[in-house]
Image 1 (cartoon, rainbow, N blue to C red):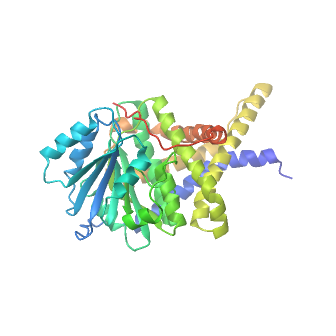
Image 2 (cartoon, rainbow, N blue to C red):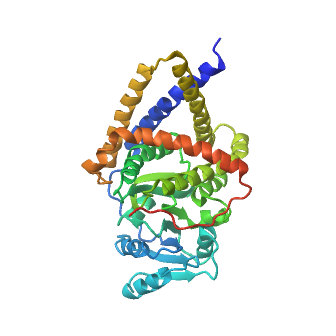
Length: 403
C-alpha cells in the first residue's frame, strides 16, 4: 500500500514535470494557431487608450511618447490622475500642449481613490468601442492596437491581453525576469489559451477590453488587491471570453531589488488566491469546464508548495541521520531535458521580439530554479496573508521599477 508520504514525494517530484510538459504542448498548439500575417485592423473601430497614474513623474513621458508612435488611426487617450503628489500632472499638460494632434483628455481626481476606482471614473466618460488599459511606466509597441483587435474574432470576446517584454536588465534579477517572461510566462499563457480556451488573468499593463463588457461587470473592483486578475474572472462569470495574443507587445519595467520583486509577486499571489476563493464555488456549480481547469491549476500549485516543504524537510533530516546525500538521477535528467526544450521553444516563438542578448542568456542555468523557488515562497506567504489579513484594498504605491 502506498503511504501518504510516498504520494507527497511523487507529487513534489512530478508536478513540475507534468506542468512543464503541459506548457510545452500548449505552446506548440498555440504556435500552430497563431496568424503570422500582419493585420491592419479596422479603422472604423474606436479605441480609447486608458492610463491611470499616481506619482509617475519619472516614467510618464516615456509612456506618452510611445502613444505618439501608435500606427492605428482611430484612437484617443484618456489619462486619469489619482491625486498625484509630484509633477506628473504638469508633465502631462506640457506633453499635451506639445502634441496637439493626439486626442487626449486628462481627468484629475480630487482625492486618491486607488487604481481600480480611478479607472472606473475614466470609464464613465469613454464612448469608444474598446478600451486599451496600460500603465504609466509601460511603452506600447506601435502596432499593439491592431494586434489586439485581431484577436477579437467574435462578439463574445470581452478582453484580449498582450505580451510584456522586460526592458530594464541592469541587474541579475532584471535579466532573470526577462528570461522568465519569454520562456515561462509566455509558455503558460499560450498553453492556457490554446488548451483551456482562455487565460487565468489579463496583464494589467496591456489589456484591450470591450467597453460593453467592462460596463456589464460594473467596471473594476476597487477592493481587489489585483484588479487585473479580478476583472478577468468577473468577465468569465458573465460569459465573456478572455484571450492572449503574444504578438501584441508592451515593454515594461520590472523590480530590480529583492524587496520590490517579492512585494510584487506576493501581491500577485494574494490576488490569485482571492480570485480562487471567490470563484471556486461558482466554477464547481458550472460543472467541469475550462474555468475549473484553471482554478485546479492554481490549487495544485499551492498544494505543491507545501508538499515540497515536507519533502525537503524529510530529505534533510534523513541525510543528516544516515550521513548520505543522494539525488534522484532520473528526475534531475527530466528536469534538465524539459528545461532545454522549453527554453528552445520559448526563444523560437519569441522571434527576437524580446531582444535577448548574450548577457541575458548567461543567466540561463538559473532561471528555472529562480521561477520555481519564487513560486514556492510566494505561494506559502500569500496563504498566510489571505488567512490573517482582514481587509484587502486597491490602494497603490509607487513600485520598484529598476534603474
